[in-house]
Image (cartoon, rainbow, N blue to C red):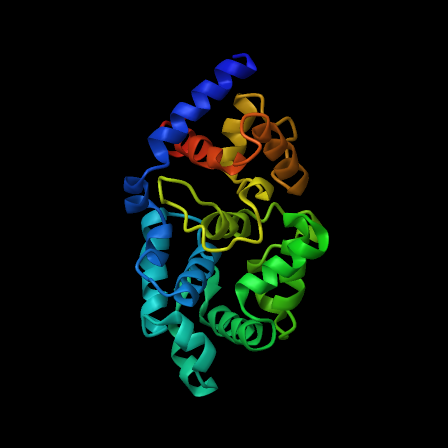
Length: 254
């Protein structure tokens, strides 16, 4: 397909998958249960963190996580005493276990009490660099101010070349907004034009088949390459094509 036909093809797929009924099978539904800003962003961040593997299992375990946080994640993160976090140790999702969750709660407490919250942690990095790469790098530094070497594998480090799929997905949820209303669009200082594709096995394979990505590894350079390709179709909202590439890979087995 030439670029015009490819854009038309992908735009049609965006229309199919970027709609409210997409939420019914997507982990974003967990954060959609909340209305308070802090509840939404914390629920979204924790859900994105465990978003690998079977989607029903992700949703089930993310909902379990919310139960352990009293279904009030914002209040729990900000106010929970250390003794209250002990019950979190029973949690497990694949290789993310209760010790990881306890660390995440402690780190998030530090972020909300000393750095102005998740939004500020990401937006400060973006404002200082003008890039999502800078936002992710700053967040990673702040997140690990609290010591926790074991948990480092659960937070991608773009400085080491990671694709940061789950963090980019979280930023899509928080920063992107359109009439479909799937993403929240709660944060305004990182424009959706600057967002990077949440690159995973499915979107990478589909991207290569469509000629949007030549790099073989799903690393940060690949994220830059495929997002640059998508900006040719819509420079103001390149990551809307995440819906198209993901839908083609997961639902259509493209």
